[in-house]
Each structure stands twice: as structure tokens, then as C-alpha cells.
Image (cartoon, rainbow, N blue to C red):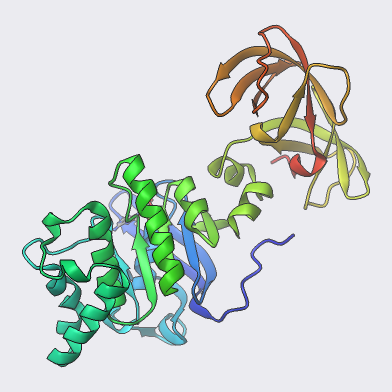
Length: 371
Ligand code: ATP
């Protein structure tokens, strides 16, 4: 399993065993339940998960805006927080910068002054401020807007100002808190691509919070999928998509069909599962025994539909409905009381009532122990 294999580059952010419980009038909320991860130099690590899973809490703990209960945070080889050593550096001493949802630019300040702001709050000499601000504006391609105000800029340019301000202090570690979430889909897509381009040019290290799976797979070198205060799976976008560790992960990055069954036979790295629809060969990372109840997950886009009798690892189904969606056709199929969704790029559309076979590559059918 290639899961969670950390890149060789040295970590710029290390989080170990982080816990955080909020005490509210309605009781206790365990927002982080022991989270560990390393973000390597030059890497974009995305924190992905539904609302309330703890992404923002983790980001704010790393930033120093929130105080964890226990664990350790190291940024650029310096301990920023350690419950054991009783260390907790204030945000301004953590060698990182943050880019917020709304970019948090000062509307009454010019682009130059917005970017210069973090330098002016420390004691950097005037001439050096000028030099560094112009340098970083040049890097993000905004030199000629130095005297403009944020309101005169496009969304993309504002994002670049926010990024320039994060880069000007030269720390190279940037925390992003859903920076694109307030924008409409088209703009978001463009800004995502632009951000990725800038990251590849400049090479900063990022911890990036989003609940948008496309943003996560498009931007992330690795993704940490979070589930109620824990990391459910950490890996590259392809690891997470092709070998999800659970139904939760499979459903969060893409979608999945699920069949219940029991293990019939274990054969050379594969598992033969008896399902209500028929026997199905799948693969697993779990240790299974014959007779054990299991679930088989497979993605709608990983099935091949065939109207003929041929095909290996084949389930016999009936077409209930088809929907032409331009880039592909989506079928709703039924078999032995089960409903399956299937996507295909075949041009011929099968009519409702047709008997079809669904063929599955055993590598794409993931078998998990039933809970
Ligand atoms: P979202 O995308 O909605 O921000 P999230 O994944 O970032 O969600 P968090 O904001 O980290 O999740 O919240 C994790 C849990 O902690 C939630 O149950 C939330 O209600 C709770 N929580 C967060 N901040 C506080 C706070 N200041 N006081 C009390 N509870 C909080």
C-alpha cells in the first residue's frame, strides 16, 4: 500500500498527537482527537472534510490562534507548541503566514501598503521594505498595480496581493483557510489553477483547508481526509481516489457503489465475495477470513457495461434509467434488489429494461470488513 509515504524532503510543518476539546455550554466538543502529519518542503497538503470535522481548528492550532490541549507542532525545525515541554509560541513567532477566505486586504490601503503591512509591524528598515515589497509584487506579476487599491483589482489579482503579503516575510510556509470558497465556480477554477502555477514557480509550503473535493485533488500533493477530529486517510490524490481506506473516504472523494456480501475464497491477492448479485472478485488491504461479512465498494466510472454475455467478473443487471450528461452516460441499474450507478463514455445508450453485464476490474473493487 503506497499510503501516506511521506516525500523525502524535510518537513516544514510537523504535527504530532494533537488534541483539542472545546468546552461549550452544550457540552464538550472533541474537535481534534490525536492528529499527526508532516508537510514536506514545497508541498501542498490539503485538509479535506465536511463541515465540523476539525480542519479549521487544526489550521488555527498550527497558526497559534488556537491553543491545543496536547501534542506537538514544529514549524521550520522550531517547536511552536509542545504540551510536554510547555512551549507555545505566539502566532507572530511561528515563521508562517496565513491567507484567509476573504483575503483580508485593507481596502483603504494601496497594494504596496497592504503587502508592506507585515514588515512595518516588525522593525524592518524603510529601504528594505521597499525593496522586498517590489520584489514580491514582481514575483506575483503585480508590479504595475503597486499604487492601486484592492477594490480596483479583479478577484485573481486580489488573491495575488494576499499571496504577496504572505510571501513578503520570507517564511515560505503559508496556511490557507478556504481562500476560494466565497467565489463562483468558474472564478474558483481559474484562481485554483493560478495558485497552483504560482506555487510551482515560487515553491512555498502550504497547508490548505477546503471542503471542495475537486480543489483538493487538483491542488494537493497530498490530501488528509478528516473525519470527526481524526485523519481518516492521508495520501496522494490518486491513492485516495483509487484505494480509499473506507466508505467515508470513497464517498468524500468521488462516489461509490456498495454491495454487502461474505468472503467465499481468498485467492492470490484477491478476494472472492459472494454478493446478492453474484460472485465478485475484489481486492483488499484487510486481513479477511472465509465466511466473514464484507462490503465491496466500486466507483460508477470503473465499471464496463456490456450487453453481450462475455466478460469476466461480471454482474448481471437491468437498466432502470439512463441519463445522457454530455461527457458521459449515467445508468441506474438494478440486480437482485440492489441498485447500482454506473458511468460510461460509450456512445450507444441502452434502453430501460435492457439486460446488461457489469464487468469490474478486481483491482477497482475494494473489499472492506463489514462494520
Ligand atoms: P467548517 O468547514 O464548517 O469550518 P471544520 O472542519 O473547519 O468545519 P472546525 O471549525 O474545526 O471544523 O470545528 C470542529 C468542531 O469544533 C465542530 O464541532 C465545531 O462546532 C467545534 N468548534 C469549532 N470552534 C469552536 C469554538 N470556538 N467553540 C466551540 N466549539 C467550536
